[in-house]
Length: 331
Image 1 (tube, rainbow, N blue to C red):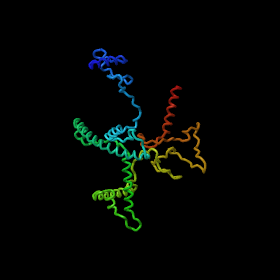
Image 2: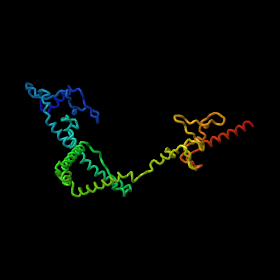
Image 3: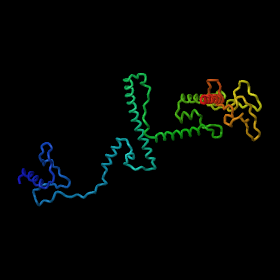
């Protein structure tokens, strides 16, 4: 067969075995040129010599599944660019009771903190421009922006470091028993805490002021005897006055005691007994007859200027009103 006719012949043979055809969406015609063969279709390779061996051989499968060094290399490059630990994305199992993960978390938090600092700097610029455009020129520096801490492990590590420094400081400034400290407090603050001379001087001044404040707080009961916070409570529920001694006559113009008679005499009860008031002059026994004047404690009496409201007057008024009603009804 001529070389120019080979391609047409092979396509004609292959088209007999193809089960699907591709339709061009623009023209609507069947186009065989872009009909990709599926994995379950056959490949047609023309050969000149029919006695030539088959150039296609089946390869054994699943023999190189463990050879993924190239995939791991690409994965490491991806994680290195992301700066995210493998365990956070599920590519690695957590070992060592989480200690390795906590250390990785600290390194990851430092990376996030650097990103947050850059974001806060740019957000500050945006906020200043926004406030300036709204006319708040006096508030351009009167705000603070912040982002949440990405990790608590870093804070816990700082706390542990400070604990060790404080314990070392106490050991250096404490007396071992011979009356001589290992170091002075100034040397320990300078070399353990890293303070400068000015910071040490400022710390001593602050301690002196705080000690003076503490002494002033101790003297508060003698300096401030009454704050006035409970005046309204004392006025409502406190004692009106001290109880009078037995047989004593109240001073003229004095206020009667709560619940007592406005001017009557009260006989003292015998030991273990109760006070028995005299029976009323005719009529049945009522609460008003037992207590002639049932007094009520009020906060302010605008009518009489007294703290005791006499209910006996109201009882007398009610009696007069009932009499007048009887006259009108019986007339």
